[in-house]
Length: 296
Image 1 (cartoon, rainbow, N blue to C red):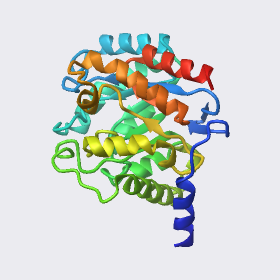
Image 2: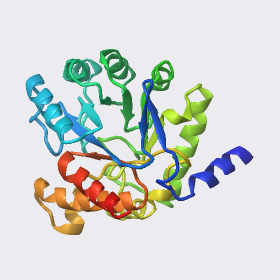
Image 3: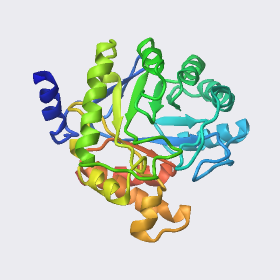
Image 4: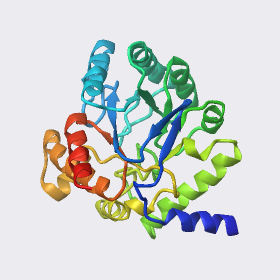
């Protein structure tokens, strides 16, 4: 109990971008000490909320990856199953067909970081074998009992995201007594458990899961408390890109109209020490980050 409360206390301290921040990913170190980095979203699905069907063909997926790389993405995050609200699960075989070949194609011409967005251990295993460096699991490695073991057997970076429920039902009735404390506690518990499996804490990154089992009020509360959410010394990954809550606070009904408020929140979060951002519009968000950093 003393250790748990110590970690919880540490997790509540404000992130300081001037302190060393290293994320270990498959034998390589991503230095987040000075400059924030962008994770570009690549959905190889027919039904993702923002770009479903645009990049489900291998050639289109590779072309979009090349574009995001040319615009400055440090990480390409590839997903083969939609996690939009109400989305139903697909088979592991389908996910592998949608992602593995694209990972191999990107890896054959780029030495940057590749992430697999999945909750399934078999998909993660195939992606890592194909050349992925990071496992980005929206369930925080809880949906598949084998996922933690797959990650422990690798040197991959790991994104632990918080989600209440599943994509199919997460927006039905999300309820918390204190959403920020619940997210902090989830991260503390995950950190404690995964380190018992031999996973180096420097391989872990944490994502509060904006829009995943949260109301507008929950999202805003988390955004206000971003610097206090992740365990001390570990990076927080923020994913607000084009999400529906932006339409509620800005009247940006069309998806492309949400890029500007996304970049505004990216810049605000960077000013508060958040160094990783998962986005659709790599160029615009990277410009917002660099402009913010020029003033710091």
